[in-house]
Length: 557
Image (cartoon, rainbow, N blue to C red; front, top):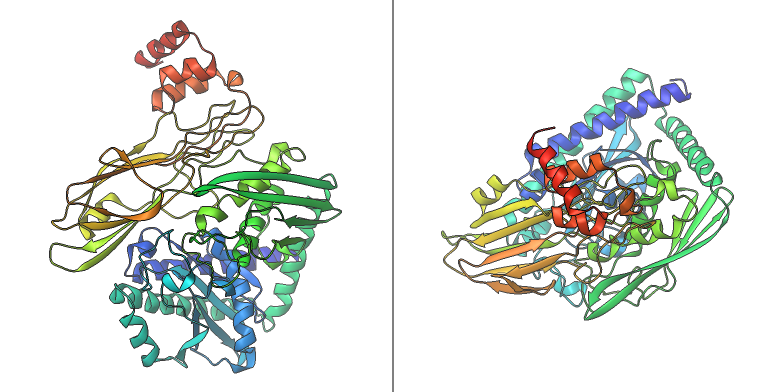
């Protein structure tokens, strides 16, 4: 194979398509809705050193850049020479990089002509792992579920039955857990056979040479993008609701030549609640927005991240000490991009977005069906994305995550829950020249004869998404039970017939609202994104002007 840009692009396109095919295998064979419907996973092809080569197109952001770190840690315990065909190593240790105990990493080797040429890795959110139900109020990692150190779950294709009996005994949904685990083996086999076919087709005996060239090209592209920015030190901080009192994410970004460093000194200390973030995920959630802003077009390979360094002081929210609780770590980690974009706004204003309504309001229902079977329902709905320099923020679009929204029909068919309402929350996007994306408005009724537990993992009740350059903040999130406000980081008993209602936060606006065009306001009013009252209040339109727009809308013009 020629090692040139065109040949490498063709190879990478084939590898990405292969990872998408493996992801399809995982989805089709999975047992849980969190995999099948929400797509809460990522599949990554890595070098024998744990360097990312390719990923599935829909891979979850946090997983894509954490799996290589997990792989490097696995190789410390299981050196490359100790792997055999059809081995599979699993772990959910947050300090090794997976994020929290509900994210299970798996790695399998790929051999070609008797040589180890790659690893296929995946991180998947499991439906249950024992401990407390997925929640934000656990106080240490031991409450959150069974902690699995790096272990060979399969040796040359043979399962470790003792390990599996232990995992099944500590799981409320063992069939779904084990079904998803074997579905990942199917995905790994799809990846293995496909990679061998590609190597044969392309005449590649040494994949390492091609990977090295890919990494060098990606690194050079990122370095050029960093070099185009003005050298300097840029600082910002954002506040989150926190636990009992606000918490701060502080960041200092230094651009020097072709390198960029991100330091989170000044961030609040870790807390005795499940919103701490392991340092590897902090690194991942810092690198992703930088990639989006500086070099969005080139492939995301190992080389893209070499010019970036990320640090956070020990004992803080973004680098806690063991055994800190992390079950709801997304509540904190999804503020990281907002702090980074805020810091970089003065230097690259045309390449950052206003703050998004992330984190989303996660509600997990658990209990028993009318037949007495246990159920756990992870409901994924989405806030609004922050407005962009040239476009509105996307509605009901999570940033930086990309978990899919559950199907209403599947939720109602598989759980004793009824979705009373799922609609766009009008007026939730922050006003601006470009409007922030709107969040969703959801109402769920408990349709069982027995109480269920509703675990709430949310934020942005008192700290809505900020706007940029004169754009206004998005609407805050909200949650209530039967109209009574409910806490956002707790577990509560919900009685039969009760209705849980919540609104996802809207994204911040970009630019002064007075600069928004009449045509865009007409579209907003037509689609229910902005009400007539808000058009008058925020966009400084007269009532006659708004009525004129409504009349035009009524005539279909």
